[in-house]
Image (cartoon, rainbow, N blue to C red; front, side, top):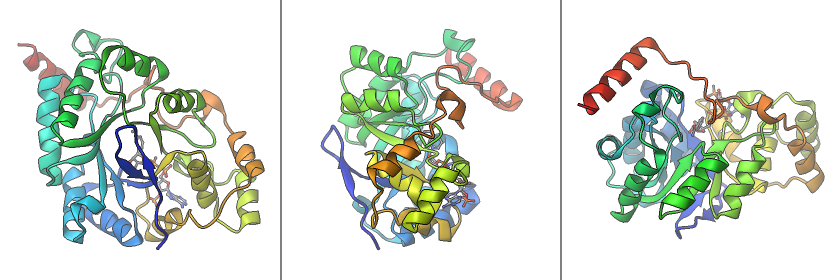
Length: 304
Ligand SMILES: NC(=O)c1ccc[n+]([C@@H]2O[C@H](COP(=O)([O-])OP(=O)(O)OC[C@H]3O[C@@H](n4cnc5c(N)ncnc54)[C@H](OP(=O)(O)O)[C@@H]3O)[C@@H](O)[C@H]2O)c1
């Protein structure tokens, strides 16, 4: 098993540069997927309140039998759990669902509430919720705290109004959407980048530039793209429920890409057109009717 190198964060903690994400893994499949990932060698698991599988992630890690300190666990606070009261309730539930007394990293999942244009009336600014994350950090229940999907202006606002610089910014990044302006700003301010959807859900794997490099270096297109992320200095979050792909995605530390190949892959960037997920500034969320109903009901209740 290749050891995964670690990166030092701005708060002195260290994080494995390769993580296993569990977005879109059904709760019923999560224990098996996470257990298999641990067998392959992953020691960094990325979940979220919104993924609905924190319980199963905790169960898999606890039953696998490693010491808690041997696995780096991240979770995230959903957009709808805003404000100190909700953040406290939700964080308590995250810890009890995971069955741990701390998480290694806790993130604000998105800067804005799901329907940004209408309900700012109700939504508290993310800075207020960030201050609650600072409390979790101070009391030791979140060893590190960070943000996700933050654009430059969101990071500037945190810098102006809060005490703690986020340890990481978890953002979409892959060859079709290199997201370099946010990466560079974050890096310049000591914030490590975690890349989500690193292979753009497989969309980049048939790209001729990438397949040609893969053929030449004797690796798969997925390995080439994931290695490109690592050599850019980012932390990579891969996801697969397929054991052979988990293994393939883990084998990144026994080869190196030449600068010319790094440059050629970066040049595949399509800017905003390359995004697979929403733009954090103008999210076009598909909100289900029932989800909207319960969210509005809860907010009305909260404001009584
Ligand atoms: N912070 C955020 O807002 C945010 C948003 C999205 C994701 N994330 C995090 O980032 C993690 C990764 O994101 P993602 O799931 O979008 O990543 P991704 O790796 O770009 O896409 C995963 C998809 O690619 C397939 N796949 C994985 N490895 C492959 C390989 N070697 N060859 C061919 N296909 C392969 C998987 O299929 P199978 O599973 O069927 O094998 C799955 O359908 C998530 O799990 C989550 O933890 C965070």
